Length: 344
Ligand SMILES: C[S@@+](CC[C@H](N)C(=O)[O-])C[C@H]1O[C@@H](n2cnc3c(N)ncnc32)[C@H](O)[C@@H]1O
Image 1 (cartoon, helix red, strand yellow):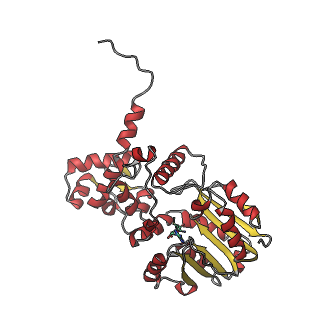
Image 2 (cartoon, helix red, strand yellow):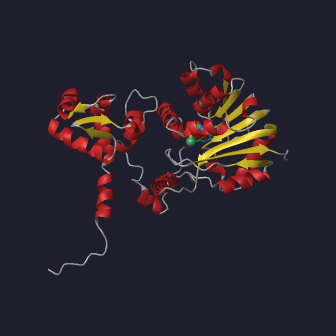
Image 3 (cartoon, protein in one colour):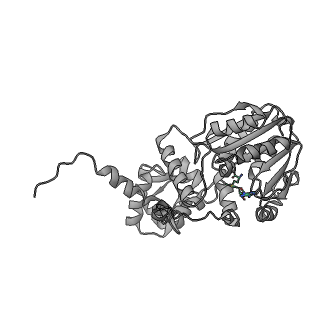
């Protein structure tokens, strides 16, 4: 046999294929209780296996993987959690992302129908996707892993925010951004507009949360002609404008927003950026975009220039656009603008 001469390292592909097993491995570690068992402790292999009632030989191999991906540290033959896994993989952490890990290791693969989508056989997007308690809770939990914190720290630095008394949280789901912003301004009242089914869930899930008396939920469907109130000092919108950016509807929508605001009011947007610096974040971003498009949703990104141009045409100016934070799940572009004139 004449062996072919190789010009590139196959390991580059093999490594990628093996990494694809990780979500199932991590989820099994979660389900077996490994992260909870190691939380705040340092245990030997035998102690871990005893605590989990697991096979020590297999547990040893699992721990080696978790060490290799920096979820677990090994020192003096004892294992402990890293800050990363203590924060996101322990069940009693308020920002745990166990639901997200499970989603990647159980159930259908979102790319099962990709070949069909590539042939143009694209599913119609089902907006009922948002409308379940599970989805709403999952969105809130994932937003707590940095996105809400980034938005709050940006918003509270904007001159004028602390004097605001009336805010709209458009398509705000159960109002988890509102609850966080109300903590920073105790005179603020937020009006959350979302689909009637979401508002019903919000009233059920949030009626005991601190400051809920300063939030009003309004049943609303933006595909109709209803109004979303007026006299706002702050108009906050997160992860909603993707739908309308492909045609003139973005400008039309932003003009309506302008009409609902007081002169000098603050428009604040938080949407996934269309660009990023870190190579790994870029890959995550483009995979999420393909998943979104193949599910029949137009896009998952909003280029900041597109938004600024539409805002300019809709009577807004004085933009602030901080560098997207790439430590959170997706690089999110925050933007603030001021209502500088009324528009028709
Ligand atoms: C991606 S989620 C964003 C939720 C929240 N703002 C956030 O950033 O996490 C999109 C939100 O838009 C709402 N939504 C979708 N279609 C809508 C419509 N036609 N009218 C009003 N709200 C809608 C959904 O119910 C959902 O809460």
